[in-house]
Length: 363
Image (tube, rainbow, N blue to C red; front, side, top):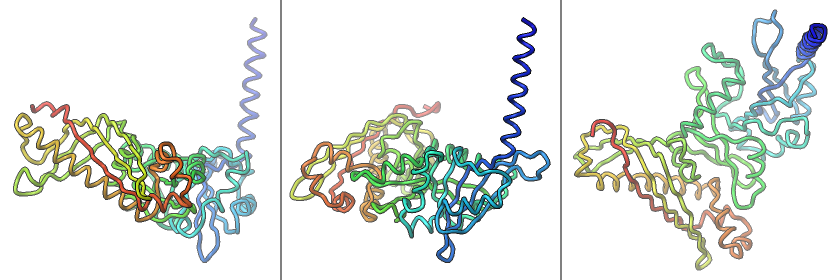
């Protein structure tokens, strides 16, 4: 028995050493960045460094070429090991390149080559990509991990959203919806995720939703949980503008499409259950409960209508109103040459109601 255990342990140790030596010979690209300058494609590859003698825990390789595959071929001349893309966690494109080009023209190899990862986060960076790739983050882990962690935290807080390459492609080829992606930037030397990039039917960036608008985007997506926090101005309780913060714990959102006189109409009904978390003025909830609920619902309606109007102006439908139109008004939907243009002319009627279910420990 002891002899067998000894042989088994030796096998494990030998296998581990072999794996370590092979790992040292590879360059695992965890983040890929795409930007352009003077009409040339710039590609950044961020990889961890496993050599104990190296001063840096990750390396950044920048190349210039005509395609992503062409740049990888050039990057092999600079890498300390054979480049492997199957472990990529993030694909980041600059807003500049997203605005000027169809994303499929540059992302094609990531979908076509089965060795690449299509579950990597897809992110739009606001600014020159070099500001991200060469940032110094002394209080955070290596860059690729920091990008992922900041994005996940912001997504949970509804300050942005998240999407991977496979989801981005699915939205791009669906006639009833247009793609979107989270946005990221560098602010005062730190990494910040917030806002949502909007793409048209040609997979080009056309505009964005701000960090403050992102929670309302999540509500329209029926993505209320985990709890969605909002801070809303209340103007009619006192002579000055006061602010009330709520945490929406539950939301029932329904879409009812119809087609009349050549135009689509959507009746959107929302029942939101909220917890009162903050108020800059005294609220007598026993007396003013219904009044406060109506004021909150009115302000939420105003914000939601503003976001929908912005999406119609850009002729994009990241929410997926077209999915309901296709499901319930298919004959009218299939006649549309462009759903985005039809959505831009649609009549959207949003009616939210708010019920405050908890006021906190003060009452």
